[in-house]
Structure formats: C-alpha cells, structure tokens
Image (cartoon, rainbow, N blue to C red; front, side):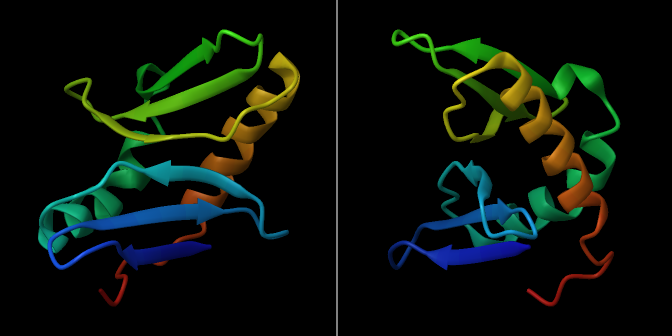
Length: 107
C-alpha cells in the first residue's frame, strides 16, 4: 500500500506498507510533488536492479536498507530489523508491495 503525505507547503513524502500495515519504506522528502510522482512511477523498474538496495547495520547492531535510484541517490529508508534475515524479508516484501502498485497512480 502506498501512502502519500504532505509534510509542509513545500514538502511531500511517501511510504510503502505491507498488506499487514507494517511500514517497509519511508521516502526522503521531495520539494516538488511532480518529482515524487516520477519517483513512484519509476519504482517498478528500480526494484528489478539489485544495486538499488544498500544493506546496512546501525551502531546498535540493527539491520536496515536504503533504496537508491539508478544514479545512487537515496530515495528512502527501511525500518530497523533485529536480524539480517528479517531485513532480507523486508526487501522481499517491499518488492512485492511495489509490484502490486497500479501502473497509473492517481496522483
């Protein structure tokens, strides 16, 4: 599920959630809604590229990933996971969630 939020008069974000309602990815802030819309429209193409997911470990030993565009710009961050397997499952669920998005989102 895709949720779009207007953070301020000039900032928009989106989040992608699993069917159970768990947040899989929170986007970076976008200053223009059109830029955010283009990014969302590009997600299906991006998830086919393994290089767009950067796996990380934070200073507390928790796992997370970032989603990047084809130029390496960060588009969003995942929640924290207690295990590497949980993070990999989060990536798998995110790919599924994105693949289920309609091709033409009424934005």
